[in-house]
Length: 151
Image (cartoon, rainbow, N blue to C red; front, top):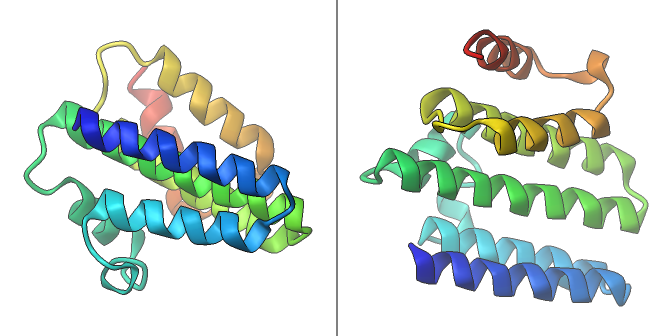
Protein backbone atom coordinates (compact mmCIF):
# COMPACT_ATOMS: atom_id res chain seq x y z
CA UNK A 1 0.00 0.00 0.00
CA UNK A 2 2.84 2.40 0.83
CA UNK A 3 4.44 1.81 -2.57
CA UNK A 4 1.11 2.52 -4.29
CA UNK A 5 0.68 5.76 -2.34
CA UNK A 6 4.21 6.83 -3.29
CA UNK A 7 3.46 6.14 -6.97
CA UNK A 8 0.29 8.20 -6.68
CA UNK A 9 2.27 11.09 -5.15
CA UNK A 10 4.54 10.96 -8.21
CA UNK A 11 1.52 11.00 -10.50
CA UNK A 12 0.12 14.01 -8.60
CA UNK A 13 3.40 15.90 -9.02
CA UNK A 14 3.33 15.14 -12.74
CA UNK A 15 -0.31 16.26 -13.04
CA UNK A 16 0.49 19.54 -11.31
CA UNK A 17 3.54 20.12 -13.51
CA UNK A 18 1.52 19.54 -16.68
CA UNK A 19 -1.36 21.73 -15.50
CA UNK A 20 0.91 24.59 -14.47
CA UNK A 21 2.65 24.33 -17.83
CA UNK A 22 -0.66 24.60 -19.65
CA UNK A 23 -0.56 20.99 -20.87
CA UNK A 24 -4.08 20.24 -19.71
CA UNK A 25 -4.66 17.20 -21.91
CA UNK A 26 -1.40 15.65 -20.67
CA UNK A 27 -2.51 16.33 -17.10
CA UNK A 28 -5.86 14.62 -17.71
CA UNK A 29 -4.13 11.67 -19.37
CA UNK A 30 -1.90 11.37 -16.30
CA UNK A 31 -4.99 11.41 -14.06
CA UNK A 32 -6.33 8.51 -16.10
CA UNK A 33 -3.04 6.60 -15.86
CA UNK A 34 -3.00 7.14 -12.09
CA UNK A 35 -6.58 5.87 -11.83
CA UNK A 36 -5.64 2.76 -13.78
CA UNK A 37 -2.74 2.15 -11.43
CA UNK A 38 -4.96 2.67 -8.38
CA UNK A 39 -7.61 0.25 -9.70
CA UNK A 40 -4.98 -2.16 -11.09
CA UNK A 41 -7.00 -2.48 -14.29
CA UNK A 42 -7.64 -0.57 -17.53
CA UNK A 43 -10.02 2.39 -17.39
CA UNK A 44 -12.61 0.69 -19.59
CA UNK A 45 -13.05 -1.90 -16.82
CA UNK A 46 -14.13 0.63 -14.17
CA UNK A 47 -15.11 4.01 -15.65
CA UNK A 48 -18.38 2.86 -17.30
CA UNK A 49 -19.62 1.36 -14.01
CA UNK A 50 -21.79 3.22 -11.49
CA UNK A 51 -19.71 4.95 -8.83
CA UNK A 52 -20.72 2.52 -6.06
CA UNK A 53 -19.46 -0.37 -8.21
CA UNK A 54 -16.23 1.51 -8.92
CA UNK A 55 -15.66 1.93 -5.20
CA UNK A 56 -16.41 -1.75 -4.63
CA UNK A 57 -13.84 -2.74 -7.28
CA UNK A 58 -11.35 -0.40 -5.69
CA UNK A 59 -11.64 -1.76 -2.15
CA UNK A 60 -12.52 -5.45 -2.55
CA UNK A 61 -10.26 -7.49 -0.27
CA UNK A 62 -8.79 -4.43 1.46
CA UNK A 63 -8.79 -3.69 5.18
CA UNK A 64 -11.01 -0.79 6.24
CA UNK A 65 -7.96 1.47 6.68
CA UNK A 66 -6.56 0.62 3.23
CA UNK A 67 -10.01 0.92 1.66
CA UNK A 68 -10.36 4.41 3.10
CA UNK A 69 -6.90 5.39 1.80
CA UNK A 70 -7.64 4.07 -1.68
CA UNK A 71 -10.98 5.88 -1.81
CA UNK A 72 -9.37 9.12 -0.69
CA UNK A 73 -6.65 8.68 -3.31
CA UNK A 74 -9.34 8.21 -5.95
CA UNK A 75 -11.15 11.32 -4.72
CA UNK A 76 -7.87 13.25 -4.88
CA UNK A 77 -7.40 12.21 -8.51
CA UNK A 78 -10.96 13.27 -9.34
CA UNK A 79 -10.32 16.61 -7.61
CA UNK A 80 -7.17 17.07 -9.69
CA UNK A 81 -9.21 16.39 -12.81
CA UNK A 82 -11.60 19.12 -11.63
CA UNK A 83 -8.74 21.57 -11.13
CA UNK A 84 -7.47 20.73 -14.61
CA UNK A 85 -10.89 21.21 -16.19
CA UNK A 86 -11.08 24.55 -14.40
CA UNK A 87 -7.72 25.59 -15.83
CA UNK A 88 -8.94 24.42 -19.23
CA UNK A 89 -12.11 26.52 -18.95
CA UNK A 90 -14.68 23.70 -18.90
CA UNK A 91 -17.08 24.58 -16.04
CA UNK A 92 -19.56 21.68 -16.45
CA UNK A 93 -16.73 19.15 -16.25
CA UNK A 94 -15.29 20.96 -13.23
CA UNK A 95 -18.52 20.54 -11.29
CA UNK A 96 -18.86 16.91 -12.37
CA UNK A 97 -15.35 16.02 -11.25
CA UNK A 98 -15.74 17.77 -7.89
CA UNK A 99 -19.11 16.13 -7.30
CA UNK A 100 -17.63 12.70 -8.07
CA UNK A 101 -14.75 13.42 -5.68
CA UNK A 102 -17.22 14.41 -2.96
CA UNK A 103 -19.34 11.33 -3.64
CA UNK A 104 -16.34 8.98 -3.33
CA UNK A 105 -15.15 10.76 -0.19
CA UNK A 106 -18.58 10.50 1.44
CA UNK A 107 -18.98 6.84 0.44
CA UNK A 108 -15.63 6.11 2.07
CA UNK A 109 -16.45 8.17 5.15
CA UNK A 110 -19.72 6.30 5.69
CA UNK A 111 -18.41 2.80 4.85
CA UNK A 112 -14.96 3.08 6.45
CA UNK A 113 -15.23 5.75 9.16
CA UNK A 114 -11.86 6.74 10.60
CA UNK A 115 -11.35 7.06 14.34
CA UNK A 116 -10.47 10.74 13.89
CA UNK A 117 -12.62 12.32 11.21
CA UNK A 118 -11.23 15.88 11.39
CA UNK A 119 -9.09 15.56 8.24
CA UNK A 120 -11.99 13.94 6.42
CA UNK A 121 -14.32 16.74 7.52
CA UNK A 122 -11.86 19.31 6.17
CA UNK A 123 -11.71 17.48 2.81
CA UNK A 124 -15.48 17.35 2.57
CA UNK A 125 -15.79 21.05 3.48
CA UNK A 126 -13.23 21.98 0.80
CA UNK A 127 -15.15 20.04 -1.83
CA UNK A 128 -18.47 21.52 -0.72
CA UNK A 129 -16.92 24.99 -1.13
CA UNK A 130 -16.38 24.15 -4.82
CA UNK A 131 -19.97 23.08 -5.44
CA UNK A 132 -23.24 25.03 -5.41
CA UNK A 133 -25.45 23.38 -2.75
CA UNK A 134 -28.44 23.25 -5.09
CA UNK A 135 -26.39 21.26 -7.66
CA UNK A 136 -25.61 18.38 -5.30
CA UNK A 137 -26.75 14.97 -6.49
CA UNK A 138 -29.50 13.31 -4.39
CA UNK A 139 -27.18 10.43 -3.44
CA UNK A 140 -24.48 12.89 -2.38
CA UNK A 141 -26.97 14.82 -0.23
CA UNK A 142 -28.07 11.59 1.46
CA UNK A 143 -24.48 10.50 2.13
CA UNK A 144 -23.73 13.96 3.51
CA UNK A 145 -26.69 13.65 5.90
CA UNK A 146 -25.49 10.19 6.98
CA UNK A 147 -21.95 11.45 7.52
CA UNK A 148 -23.08 14.51 9.47
CA UNK A 149 -25.43 12.34 11.54
CA UNK A 150 -22.58 10.04 12.53
CA UNK A 151 -20.64 12.88 14.15
